[in-house]
Length: 108
Image (cartoon, rainbow, N blue to C red; front, side, top):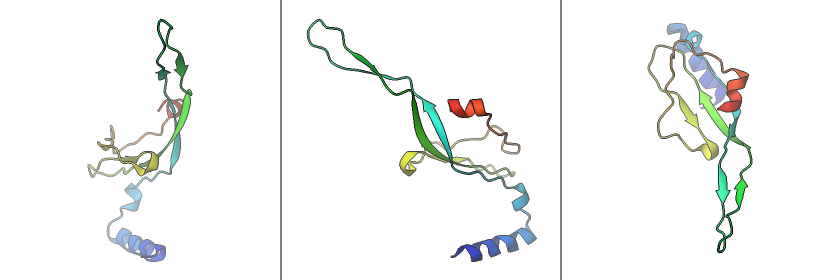
């Protein structure tokens, strides 16, 4: 189906059941993860192993789709390379989602 037919069918559905007023959509966002993991290498003899710190900030792409109606549908998140999470994200309160603060975005 092309986009015009899809939009037309959604508008016709909205006339009978006003679902567009209850929907909230999001966009793709980049989330910066702070991974404080160190790598260790093998040493020879009595030498201490060298510890190499990994880069502090890495970028992972996350697509988040949010629905804010009364249906108990879980949120789905896609990680890098389109991999799916094992368990879907469950909203704390699906009826009233809150925007993420800028400080929180940097720590997620």
